[in-house]
Image 1 (cartoon, helix red, strand yellow):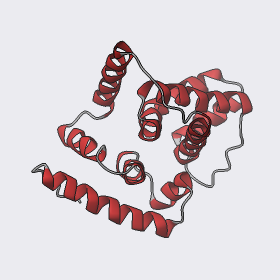
Image 2 (cartoon, rainbow, N blue to C red; image 1 turned 180 degrees about the vertical axis):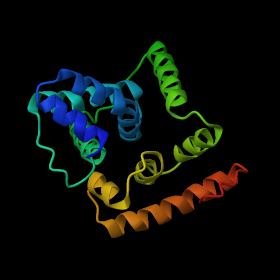
Image 3 (cartoon, rainbow, N blue to C red; image 1 turned 120 degrees about the vertical axis):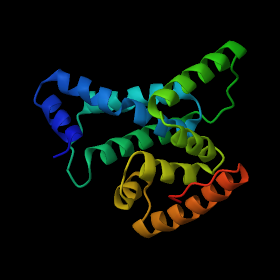
Image 4 (cartoon, helix red, strand yellow; image 1 turned 135 degrees about the horizontal axis):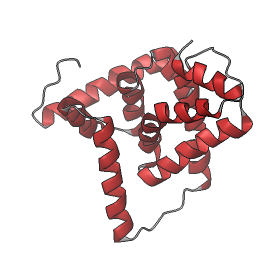
Length: 185
């Protein structure tokens, strides 16, 4: 049993501290994952809160077929896709909102991506297609297995393997254009 599952069970048994610790454990990673869909850190934060709200209110059953983190990210993905389906209109923001958005996104990124290589890699990921960015994020930053990634992205394991191969190849080309060579690709 992983930490997420034990905290969730604790919450289901009536201990609200379990939910608080669960949110503290997973909120930053979930925000950045959702942000890869919406490209707005404020909306990503709201959708993260909605994801935890769904868990707190509806208390869905966790079946242990995957890790808790995989299950949580799949719920976050569904919440995000619902949001995108209902809010595809062009949004206009004030300059002040954009400045605040950029500042908050940078602050969150610095908390989550501390070492220099991850920062460079993160910047290169921004130049990839959303699907490539998501698959690489889940596997390399969130340490999901191919099976877990397939569950979150609703694809087959084979599709994920192909997607990872193409995404790594694209990322390598992007990094090389900027004069950076990443040995692990």
